[in-house]
Length: 405
Image (cartoon, rainbow, N blue to C red; front, side, top):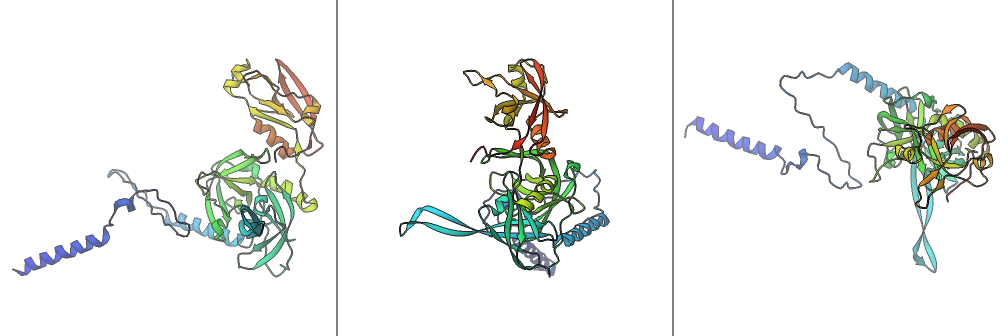
């Protein structure tokens, strides 16, 4: 056997070893295969590079732009590091199916959430659902220091709560978050979320404003939070109560909920707007609660099908009043509930077409307008379409009461 043949055999064997090492035993690695996630595993995702046709130009990333963006986010994070906190509350649950010595078993468990510094007086803002059912919580700062705080005000309707630090925090550099005007944000604006998803403290994620003016319903209370900001910035359990920020680090909202069938982020998150927080929080600090202005109606947006059934002109816009609360503000002002046929079809109904001269195209418009612009005791003027007639009805707003629960 010649030296050339020997070299060729060695090369083939070496190539075989290399292939055996680098080729995975299964090709699932290269594809988006859905597998159950184990709770304590960190799973990396690998980017897939799309095929590029030979005659297409490939743009080289602008390194200077990337570096500038990274530097901007890094600086912004450092500026906010002492503004965002982790909140831990201990709750007691009763398991009625387990009886010990004649009594149901009671267990204690921890509930994690996020919050942010509101002012220099030790007030912390978070979601009501993060602290509901407790009066005292632990607040952890970014440096690991933990302080006790008490819940001094809650608003279950807007899911807002205010905490007061009760330990001496004067040696800490707590920096209040700056508020932006949430009415000025637009779809596509860059946003940043900072919080404690799954207890992973001080986590930053980024995204955009996906939509504005959403209604976030609360089936338990029977009301919706208006003007909700929708975002695709990653938000998970533990982010609740944390800030949603604009590209300058100013607060535009408080992360509150996600839409998910699996309990984890699927691309749709919701935040209570900063303008709502600015309006509610001073009352929570002063008296522990906020009085929501209330019309005492429930309704729906007109659809083409409803418009046709009610013999209305095509594209007639307004909010159809399906029901009113007995002795509520709208009832006292003379607004009527819808009338139904034996088949539960709507036969006739009051339709609100404007409020204080502002056009009403959806039921959302009424809820948002009253929430943002009015207080208990204020009056609103509704233009109402009823059986072919248009009338103006003035309503004095009352204090909201819980319908359900």
